[in-house]
Image (cartoon, rainbow, N blue to C red; front, side):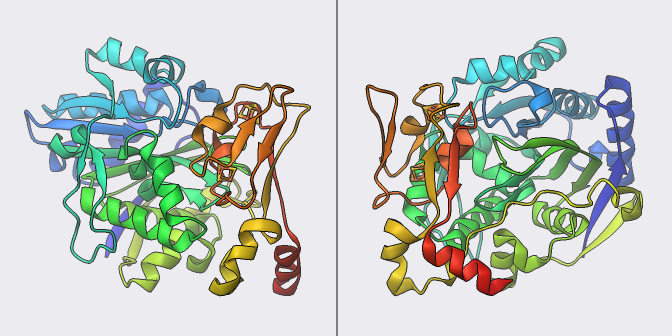
Length: 376
Ligand code: SF4
Ligand code: SF4
């Protein structure tokens, strides 16, 4: 049984964040339980892209600052690191406030690089996955996810944040390798999290995101900090607070199928304290691709599945969607049109995720609309 600790926090002012995080970690036995003097500690925030903290795409810098302080007090040597999908790391670090935190505390802030094979945990379904060398060499990992909805995977929380240790464009390659199969993608996330085994996961859910997450949703106040030693238990607990069942979330469904979903108990502030903030959150509706029989999936790849579309009114022609597309299904024409080869598209939502102008919409194909109707 894993205990997931909850704490209400409504603002990001430095002293409130530090005292709330200290109380949260003290309830778990204090930072000394997780970090020994002299240990190098990777602080792994969600640094998806170069966005300011108030867009709620990335972990708030005050959370990272406070956790770094607690690690320093315990005698550890923290460093902040992540691997954004597309944007230059220096730009991401500056825009998200991480450079300022690092400069003020005199700690490194660096890009995760140099992929090396991860030693896979027993029971893994993937046998060769490479993650950044810094994640493998760190004595401890403290995982600092952001609470966001996710158009492809419903939620991104503790487990998915660790997929960020896969270096840069290799994330898109994994999207391509697993294709349309969300369950397989969830299996990959599970294998990485279970193999990296972070010492501690602390979720920034003070202000999070609903709707078209993880990059183009709407900021939403949740007032939540959550912490646990097992990121999967934390994810299950937070999904429960949001009113989602195990089967609603591909990651939790995969964990249940594999018999690795941990039992969890809640401690700290009562879940009732979050009931109002968690009500009627805009959760992305997944299409029913998984209901199309395997033999007919080729049709899902052409006319019948959800299809990304460029909104030419809002598109700023930056080309990021074309650059990230793991299937090489997009081209930017001279007149500004994005042409998409739906036969190649794997519906990974990467183009929507990286679009800085929220100019990629998904529209449902025939079979999916019919299946959705049947499910109502
Ligand atoms: S077009 Fe978009 S959804 Fe399709 S494969 Fe490319 S990035 Fe993924
Ligand atoms: S990422 Fe968005 S804004 Fe940039 S070219 Fe693609 S659709 Fe247009």
